[in-house]
Image (cartoon, rainbow, N blue to C red; front, side):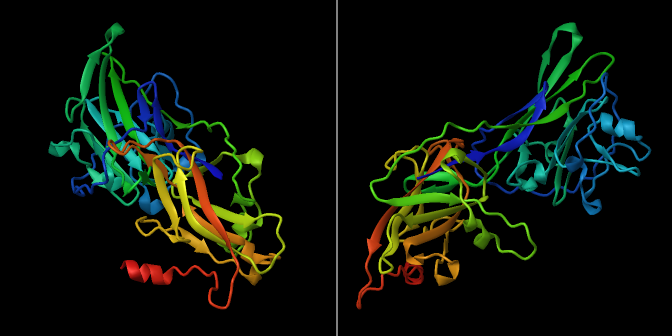
Length: 387
């Protein structure tokens, strides 16, 4: 039984904004606005902001969006959480939140702010009925929002020391696959809460940080057969190598579980017969599925292989990897391999991502080929029958 943990990456705005993975909306396409982006004057803060990491500022020149006015300095650019390349100030590969002196929110969401990357067309404010609540600009890499702090469902509160706090929320709709015994998603999902705090003389700056989930406790269990299911972890380090072939050259050990994976990242699964040297027997996979607990009968469940073939109602079909004499194995018929794109379970009623550990199970059989039965599991005929 393989044990996996789904890794969620998002953006947390420390002190005045936070990330919550509890979006329940299904994917919807937002119209692409055509209003021009308004250049903003640079805003100063009371304490210096640390210089952004290099990877945040590694934005291709064709995808750079101007941040601030054309004559902004490098120091002023860093003050408003943007990147400076010596010639211009531009938004980095993150979620940037700015508060202007004239009472405007400016929120710029980068496509690569999460893993997997989000569809910037699916990012929206929770209340977006007014025209000003739609993005003022959208590219293939960024979505830009600019709206008054009194609009789009913004709430206001007055703190001690004379601060007025404006807070709003942004979310990303995601796609859910619904099966007969469970539901999953492979999309990033988050809700971003952000604030602007105003006093009579200053505008508070925002600091961006990343928050990741801690790994769950490892779980191990023995099956009734001398068959082992394990996860491969070989990697390509040379030009021209094939990832799917190199992956099965090394494997995680028992101490490595649970293994943390990003949504949609390939998970390389291998099932093999142990302690057998009969070249005439063939391992077959009757059924492979995933659960959120170590109990193979628990719900929810998601099908991976049915009768040894990819589950056809999954948008991201499981890939069956052939194992033959070219693999270098002494008994290639004792092995079965397949690749699954990482996912997480969601609640059946609310479609809220559960962020649980994913357990992989397989029901196996040992077949002895004969003149009338080759033990080969043909998926082509099954797929043609279903269509």
